[in-house]
Image (cartoon, rainbow, N blue to C red; front, side, top):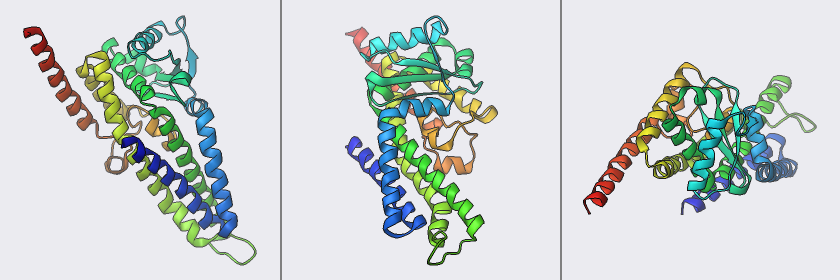
Length: 293
């Protein structure tokens, strides 16, 4: 049922892109442009989602010689999860964050920031990497990359619309100029609508990845502590990133404020921590019953 919901939301996001193009450029011509953009964005995301995301964060590939600690953790957890070994990347940033990408488990990558590797204890780093591997196992990486790419195209149209408003003054005649209604919708409404749709796609996947990571490592508390550290880091040293690609990250890279809380593509960190602690209690009770038996 969750996968059906995700497919429907992705279709709605692509439909929004087509509708915006129709409003912006007008009539059948605009619909064709929007349909073409949606097709190109989805095709590109399918085959090049990993390269698009990694390029957006300037991630650099590493191996067992250049990043032995991170590589060892990814390798160990991948084997435990029965996943192919993904490519490992490091993002040159002091911010604390991580993401996974790729169209399927056989073409996946895990990226962590330099700050994450330096600052987190090993058990917490393991929890973060397990979270990203769970995204790969659940095939969330393709879903999130498609949503991010189409969302980025909508944001680009919004930027085009603002330029058009500046140069054409929001007027239109029969021969040239953009549709003024399309301009206003694209500038003010479309990015908000795209964010809300991405929110619907992303939030449930984060909860599922948290639970999967906790079960993979057997240590929900370590991931809970890591999320709290990452939340604090986002307030002090936010990771520079395109808002369209923020849903890929384990935690929202921007400082917390009222607007971010309302429209964040991530669940509240407090809610995620509470769920992990409840799961830790559940797993602890299960372990106790097993020992007594």
